[in-house]
Amino acid sequence: MTSSAALILPHIGWAQKYRLRWKRRRLLWRSLRSRQQLTCVKDQTSKIQRGDVLAFTILRNEITRLPWFFRHYRGLGIDQFLIVDNGSDDGSSEYLLDQPDVSVWKTHSSYRGSRFGLDWLTWLQMRYGHRHWCLMADADELLVYAHCETRSLHDLTSWLDRQGQVGFGALMLDLYPKGPLGDEGYDPDTDPTDRLGWFDGGPYRAQRQSPMGNLWVQGGARERMFFTQTRQRSPTLNKIPLMRWSRRYAYVNSCHSVLPRHLNEAYDGPGGDTPSGVLLHTKFLPDVVEKSKTEKQRRQHFHDPDQFGPYYDGIISQPDMWTPQSVRYTGWAQLQRMNLITSGAWD
Image: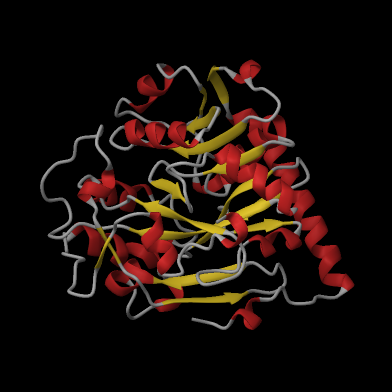
């Protein structure tokens, strides 16, 4: 693990600060324009109250994960969900329309062309998220943090407010089964961690990138399985998914990085000092094999899709990701002991 001293936000000059300021303005402007690609099909935003914690999500064909996604985040205290459905045809659209606390926008525009959905979600955050604590999470990401079974997101964000923190970072932790991918079935009403019970305890490496000062964490199971020869292309595992939002903010690359640049200080990686959680990544449920076949053809998930064909092929071949070094997932306290979660004074 990189030393914490190496993760301090690097100094930049006035010229770079000026360029980043204009970059943020360009991102906000293109997000504003992207609203024309969205059609609201269910609007519950009039129910948003001051102090509500909001969740923003973009998805396509996630009917397998939605029941537990809502159960998990409602249990944590999310008040309203704002979701962009990018052309689902598996029943996800109908499921979303049945949910009482969900507003839905539909679009068939290019996911890749919208900065992988960021333009759409940034517009919704500008319009509805200003001054709210906002969670950005994919349908296959479940946030856990210290004492999450007894302390809600309202408790956590109130504490962060008192600490003067505007963001809460997390490591994305890949969960996987023991046995070949795609084997057996999965009941969508059950906890996916029962099916995906294992993870890699490490190694994870972290560094700050200039000029934005965003963290870059790599390593873990997907790198071990699918990127041994191209480690520089392995997935970025750091996110700042929970922020007290301002319409002046803009995520740059998913919620891996954000402008203004000082917001990237909210997370200093596994074993760092800043309060943090973990996003349990449930990508490797049994449907991942068929999803990978589809997404390889759609070519919507990477800037250069041709470079990631071997990644999809690796998943499609249904490997067993488990090794004798795999760690059985037992809960947030385990992750805290392993320094993957930092609670700080929250304890």
